[in-house]
Amino acid sequence: MPVQPDLDAALMLRVKRGDREAFGALVEKYKQPVFNLVARILRDETEAEDVAQNVFIQVHRSAPRYKPSAKFTTWLFTIARNLCLNEIRRRARHPADSIDAPADAGDDLPARQFEDVKTAAPDAAALQRELARKIEEALAALPENQRTAIILFQRQEMSYEEIAEVIGCSLSSVKSLIFRARETLKERLKAYLQTGGWPDE
Amino acid sequence: MQDDRNKSLDGQLDALLRALPDKPVPSNFTARVLQAVDREAVRPAAPPWWEMFRHPLQLLPRAAMTVLALCFGLFGYQHHALAERHAYERSVEAVVQVASLPSPDALKDFNAIRHMSTTPAADHDLLALLQ
Image 1 (cartoon, one colour):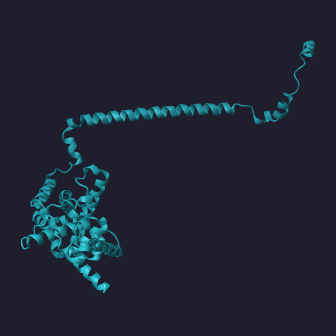
Image 2: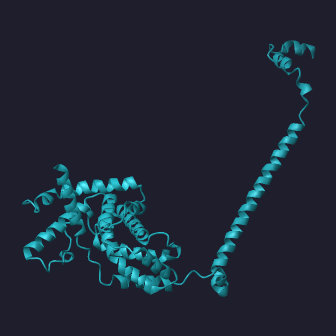
Image 3: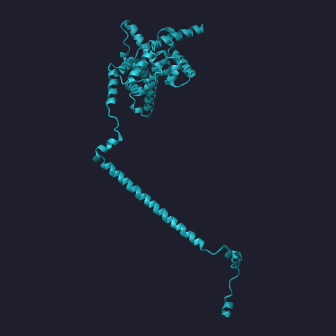
């Protein structure tokens, strides 16, 4: 996604001065990427709603400490990932609180998320839904750090350096995480990537 | 050939990942966040410490508990100090008793005397005659 650090920093400086409208603009701009990341890290959209909301509340609380030298998206996604990890740790401590089992998350994804079918024929739309489901499943099966790294790299178009800052590891670790994630995804999606379709299940 | 195939697979994978549909964000998401932030803003901050003296009657139970705790603390400390003092007095007395013992010179023949005590028992008949 296109990143405008100057604009974001300017908005954050306004938030720092208590500008509610600037904060609303930031939420509006980043709610989708944050929600995408959080939902895919947690593999649970219901919990993702609360966590994504907390991400922005945390941003608001931390605004007085924000320094424009730090890139806003890096700071934002670091907060998002940390809150997700807290949630995963909380789940591990209280497994009964979790609404659904993470590994099954891909099986019951609501159909409403695949609304981009206006231009496609019914069969093509079904195929697209099936493909998206398979990719989500393959992503969900990755270890958390590989999943986060590949999402930030592919979906947010973040650099290795920025991803290293978000995940809190070295540049070479990020490259390795992304490489392993890609290899695993290619292996899992091989059937589709080679033929353009799924073998009968 | 293999490299070309790999590159092609990579390209396809990139395209698939980029084309993944967004997760549906609730339509009232921004409003909910702003409401939560507003709620935090109106939540009263902790009052300054001097505010507690504005309503002295409200302080009574807390003050009573504090006085009670102080009394218990003072009583415990006094009890402990008294016990320590008694123990000190006892130890001084013991030292005084040790100081009143005979000087070490008096014990210089102690070993000889101790050996004498192992000699055979007294001849009671002879003692009776001597008396």
